[in-house]
Length: 314
Length: 314
Image 1 (cartoon, rainbow over the protein chains, first blue to last red):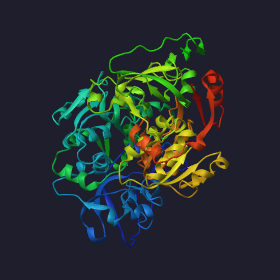
Image 2: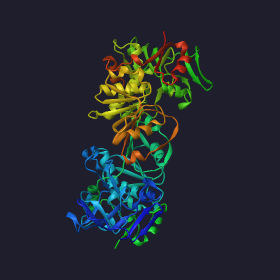
Image 3: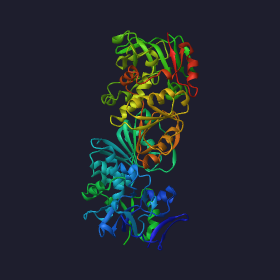
Image 4: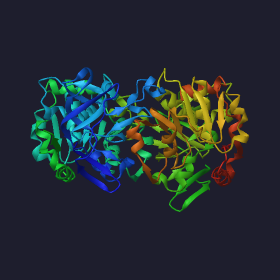
């Protein structure tokens, strides 16, 4: 089958990649759409030392098992279900896990891939493919709401108007938070204001926020966040920056900041937000390209300011 | 009066410093004992740009006001009591605050100093001066228990066997935590084992802790802490490192770590721990020196591995 494969000598579209074999407890999925994520771009630069089929954002059709014929999305962490973390219901943090298209498991930039059946969720009929393909990053946005817990709703600052920042801003706004988004591409983000998100080109001066979300994808983002949060406030760190960088940590101690790392999230709430259309992804698609154009899709996604690039597999 | 004063041309013991004047709402205190803290050493190196009388750890006798004649200790943050932070009962984080011997307020390395009366607490008769002088750093240890809240008690790793690490280890042990202390001077710390603290020369391998306290005072401590905490675990950052340093933040995101900065704490619980003798400070005193020896006291405190150096003012 066709697959976009990262190997020691780089990444390329191949047509000789073996289709996944049927396996007990796993489902083979035919990819319909796959999103290009910044993590894919990091993996291409060597992050995690990944080798295999790239891609972890998807909507597809289950080819076998109990969900055969259904349109599905699914969690990307494949847990062992036998270690202490799994026993604590923290399979997303299982030390023995593989991760779809990221760590030890072939991903979704292929005609077919395999995934544990328990990781899959059926997509409601009213959610089109081009929305369902956002389920994974939207789940990562929902993770923030879950980590903060009920009763925390407050004024918050979202740093970064990339794909994840836009999903986070919407998710927090519909969850009762008063959201200000700071970014560089506000001219194209007017639709967010109708969703209850205030836009700002600069960090509001003279105001410290009880909650700041760092989603800039840049190493400098945390310092900016620490300068914007008020004492005893919370900073959510979403950007996975795979480089060491210099930072003055003393504001964390002096102001007793709570810094929460935040990664993958729950798909159920994400699908519910898409189904209710309380979160919209229509304005977040830069382009839908055929699978044969995957190299172009990746170079397009790597251009600063590009929103979501989606691959379509007919 | 005599005072140890930090000025642009360095720090020295002077005998011409003006005594504090009586002031409504403030109490003048005659210092009996004052502890030398690592923060004093940082201030001497230029931290905060402080100018004035050094010192913030003390036990003394109130000279006027409602507490006149009483032996007292007290909180070092002088809040404005009119800003939003103060209204939220976060006076320790008041943006307009001055801080005893650290920021805009003369400190305790003097025959007398002035402090808001509401900051003072009477010392129980059964707590000797050489224990009461630990009230401030012990309050900082109590802050951790307060930040974690009830019901959090778990296995925890304390990194650093300096003065603060020893107070933290004891405080967590008597608060229901199972404590392992990692340090370099274990030969002199046998007494801690009788207090329920396990000692280790190296980070226990193959174990990840739900809670790690970083109290090494070194810039590398946070990376060590992140390597020792389990996914979704908590790292308490106690060391105020006033330098920028390089760190890889990705473990915070990938493992969804909660990093809590922790600074000053509540004096009430600290005095209660000293009164009940559930925390002991007897083995933590390196030396008690007369006030005239303050330069020697400071150079002694700056020697690696030195425990608490205390100044006595007759």
